[in-house]
Amino acid sequence: MVNKLGKVIVVKIGGATLGNHDTTIKDIVHLQQQGKSLVVVHGGGKIITDWLVKRGIPTRFIDGERVTDEPTLEVVVSVLAGLVNKEIVADIDAWGGMAIGISGVDGAFIQGRIKAEELGYVGEVAKVNPAPLKMLLKSGYIPVVAPLGVYGSKKAKALRVLNINADVVAGEIAAVIGAERLIFLTDVVGVCDRSGNLLPHLSPAEAEALVSSGVVSGGMIPKVRACLRALSGTSTTCIIDGRQPHALLNEIEGKGGGTTIGR
Image (spheres, one colour):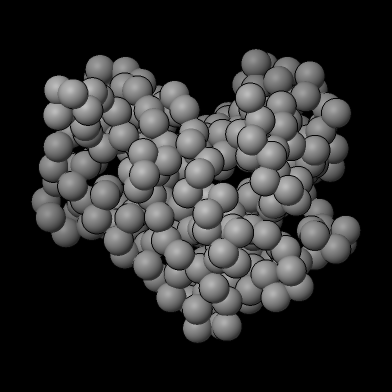
């Protein structure tokens, strides 16, 4: 069931798009000051890896997913819900915006389940409770979401934290709240064909075929699948190059590039 929150723009930002000269934060604040409602979802994989190296914790991946044991989970939570989340909130505040950082753990906002035993505390989304987002948006704040979730039984006092792919979280949020748009800011130009040519528009069937055939691979797969998931409640989804100056603002104003996936 879609819990409509009005015209909300869900923006997923990756660490690679938030460099020293990046304009994403300025664009987010500008849009808020124009009266737009936004939900920001962020990743932080590279910073997590850096902190694991500092602590001497080995990093292992299975099919592109970080194996998350208990020591790794401690770093994941500290980096995502702490360092990265609060830096983004502080930057938005510094540019004159209003934001509050939350994770999927807060208010059991994102409830998950273990994805695969061999991955450890890696989750997939079972349910999104939009109440915390609704409260923050109605109060004029931008929710800045760290992609963590909770699972377990309250009665058994076994609630645990899960590491969830940020692209998946963004897609689920967009679908559940009936977002007006879902925008992925990435470090690539968009979805490309086998020859490396940008595909500016894809139907859901075309996007699915590109994944099935292996043309879409690696980290682009969860982004495309998140767009397809979001289309159950969202009118427009797109994957754009967040390294370009004012990429977000240009996309909103109809001057963007990248790939739009829609009906």
